[in-house]
Image (cartoon, rainbow, N blue to C red):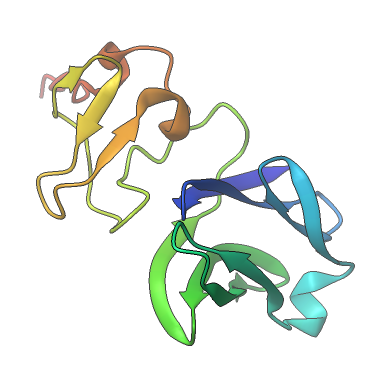
Amino acid sequence: MRTASAILFHRLIEVRENTWGAQFVLVDGREVSRRYLGGWTARAHVFSLTDEKGCDHKVEVQGTHTGLRMTRALLRVDGRVRQILELAPPGVSTRKCPHCGYSLIGQRARNDQVQCPECGRHTTLAQLGLDSADDLAPPPAQDM
């Protein structure tokens, strides 16, 4: 199973794709959309969410594919792309900001949160799939 997640209106949005290509979208752990053979049908997952002010928004999760596998998911709110999510196997962090996609490698974490230098938004280490701030360290230099 490959997954990606984002925070939208203070709710956790998760996109999952299993080994057979079925796609699932969950909001706060509850399934809101499912597509079998998602790579073949390539339709968007559509649902609505209510923001903090009580306004309803149309949310779409549209996968982009390499062959039959979803590699990224576009998260649209009211027709505008809000975020690009990269799917990765469980336990593998993309170490990128879930809000804008900027690399967070080398950034310092404070109180288990890291601030993106590009968009300024905060993300928890747990949202990134990281166990500790040490996981943001750049890889060691290779001797030639």
